[in-house]
Length: 169
Image (cartoon, rainbow, N blue to C red; front, top):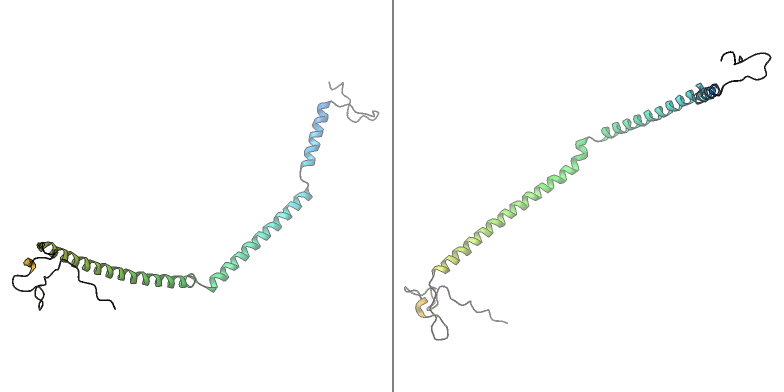
């Protein structure tokens, strides 16, 4: 095989005969060399990445100075002071409302107790027999010891009828 192939550079030959396999290997090798970044390409990429890193560092430095300025102007408690004052006002108002609600509850409890006592007294009283004369209660509602209302004869303590309306003008 070595004898059949001619050497690559013989001075008398115009052409060199190479097998296809070697030609493909040489093409692949040439393509790989073309794909490799050159020194100039690497330098440009490095310079670009350095510039981007510098811009990023500048952004962080600006953010840091802005945070320092904000911290220096107002402290956290000073920023929240108006909100805290509003919250205190709301708490005071809630306390006043709660006190009023407790007072209303107490008043309603007293009124309910008085209503219960009146209902109990009314339930304890005997029902007045109705006379056959006009549906008026008989004299049995009168207190045995005298009138139920001082100064008025014949008026029971609890009349079964509501009082008449006031006169119209």
